[in-house]
Length: 220
Image 1 (tube, rainbow, N blue to C red):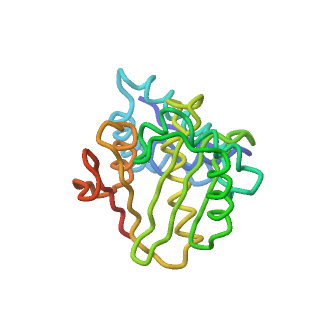
Image 2: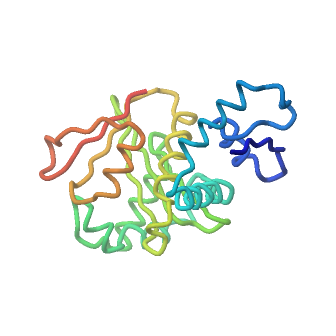
């Protein structure tokens, strides 16, 4: 059995934060060998976290922390119009939409120009190492914020969806003055999105407006 004390290094704040808050390691500046209760607590936590499946979990953790360090969320700009057009017309995105027909470019230009200028619409782009990899949108209605998001199809399965939701939910609470419930509709066959919403404690119920769909609600 081992116990660990770590020092916060430049660029490693996320790793330091996770290990100390999860009580898997101590801050070196706040550690002495006389803290026997802390040491025992840490050993017990390590036994809970580290087992035969630890390498896989550790790899996922390191990947998640890497994404957190390399990703950022920004407001969408007029120059993103064609990027949004390609994302919107991705076959998988159209299949999960309730209006599945391809979107003509001119129709999209009109839609995008209106959305980006509307104060009640919040458009954000997720970037990984300065390259856009997905988008999330919140439409503010009188009694709710309606959420929708998508990831570039070349980036599926890499963990960007969960990070996009996390950053988007944090950002909208900062930018939107009214603390409204956040709602979203998801087709039942969209397993990845169903799992993602449940991960963030959205309440799940049958949709009354769309067949074979769930309605998810997150209250502030």
